[in-house]
Length: 431
Image 1 (spheres, one colour):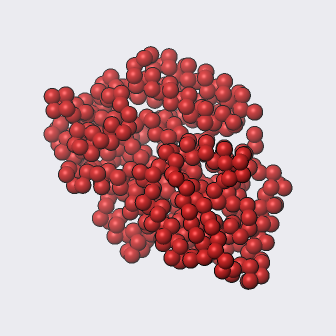
Image 2: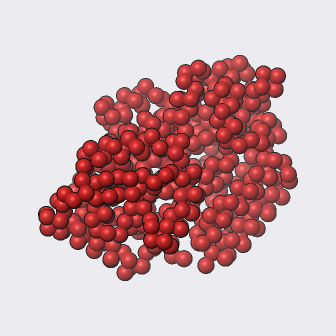
Image 3: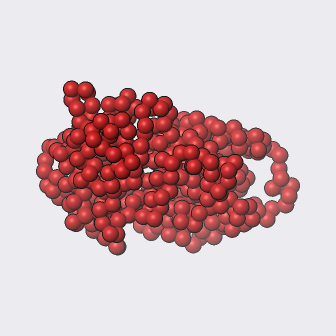
């Protein structure tokens, strides 16, 4: 299925945006309250933040009443909910979807193209949207979303455990060989300590994509007709995942256990998203140093997938679209971006906060861990979205196979071969 909206749909959306922006002042300046519904996921990261953004936005726009839906557990759950909503005509007006889910939504004609709103709003020039990060909210020629919170994978370390294991806090591992070696050295069953954990479960196969892309590989071939992660980069990636278990002594646990062990000082190192940095800092509370390092790159053409989410407009009524656009600008602009960074570890889609002392300039200077992700922008690329109706099913299939690697149910290369076959079948059936 084509990623692009039909010309008819594009023209209709452009006309709707232009019609409102060109409407008489009595319409544009209406004072009747507008009710706006907003959906998001990952309440552990975003619930308090969203409520703050909603409160501050309403203070500035008292004629717009924002109601947040009960947050979904993750991006997949939010996707499933909104796909059902599209059938029952009960979609939210705004939704914050994972960057890799925009394509699937667009294939079903759900999001409103934001390009006409951007082109018709002079204020956009003052919001500091970064072209490179703005591109992560684009599918084909459509601006399907505006980046709200972007992340990259990084390594987190317990500074005390690194030192006790003979590591150097000033020179943290920069290769996977060094990570595996240090992870094994930090392992201490007598003290109930685990050396390392690579969170391969992160939503949307983000971790698997990180491994493959950082080894110079791709998920599918250029025309998306054939699985490509079975090639050499994928083979090295799946072998490395098993090395974490066999040599680094990584346990087969769920991420919830990993978080609690790290926060309690029982986990030496983990790979996670920068999105979790604020949570790490709050939960550890200074009881030991939380150190961060760049994600190891294993090829000259290595890349890393951008994680996070984008604010998308689903509202079809012109009045609600105007309110939705104001909310999206506020949430993704300098004010919302500043609130978001301080509450999480994500990067904003606007460059302004980092340049202003009253926003994030001083914050970044005092919190160098938050700069790790920004410094990885030199290798950032899109979070790949598998094509077709089976995109969510492909995510589950890959996850199930990776579990068998970590659980040592089969040899890594045998698992990879089965995974390639299963995903290839789903790609072939995409139409």
